[in-house]
Structures are given as C-alpha cells and as structure tokens.
Length: 133
Image 1: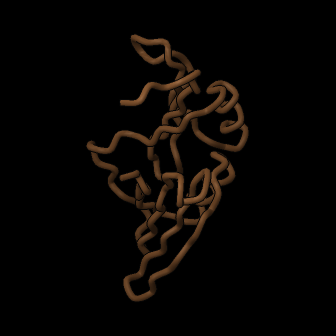
Image 2: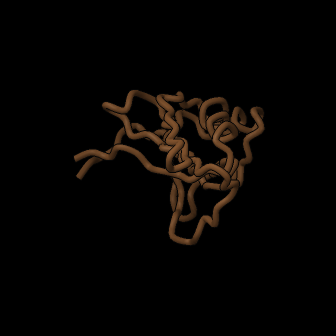
C-alpha cells in the first residue's frame, strides 16, 4: 500500500492552484470537470502521481467557503531551510501563521503557513536521515 492523495475542498480553485503552484512550488498535474455533478478536481504535487502523494483540490461549483472543523490538523512539507522557505513564501504573498523556530520541547525547526482557504501547512526543516518502522 501507499498513500495516493489528500483531498481538500476549496472555495476558489484558481486562487488555490496559484497558491500551491506559485507560492509552494508544486506542479498542476491534472485537472478535470464534472458538469453533471458540478465539481472540478485539480491535482497538484511535487512529482508524478505514480510515485508521489499529491493534493486533490476539489471545487464544488457555487460553494465559496467551508467550515474546517476541529478534526483536521495540517499538511506537512519538508523543506531544506525553513527560514529561507518562509522568506520566499512571504515575498510571494503567503501568510506565515507561525514563524520558524524549534518545535515546543524539541529541536526540530518548523513553521506554519495558511493557504487561501485557511488550511494549515507545516514546514519542517529537512533532517539528515529518518528511521522507518
């Protein structure tokens, strides 16, 4: 098994595609419309879907906002340098909701960004290596 994608409902598809591609550097991998059921899907990510997990952005026609709820936490992205990443995101108009620095009670360097629909995205400083289970 492998993770394929995470789906987020968005209120403005063009705005969300611009954020994920222009601000976070992802690629628009594919997009499709379903006129019968009135929705559009856009898949964005850092690489081909055959070997990378991606985000599915779902726009339900005519719905411009959603209640995010309290169960969803955040999307996490690894970055080479969390401080430089925040500077670049800020320069492109992105909102840094938690400035870079060590996680509470630890040494891992993190920051948080908000997308146009207010979803939280954690930026995690790349470490030398990870141990897998």
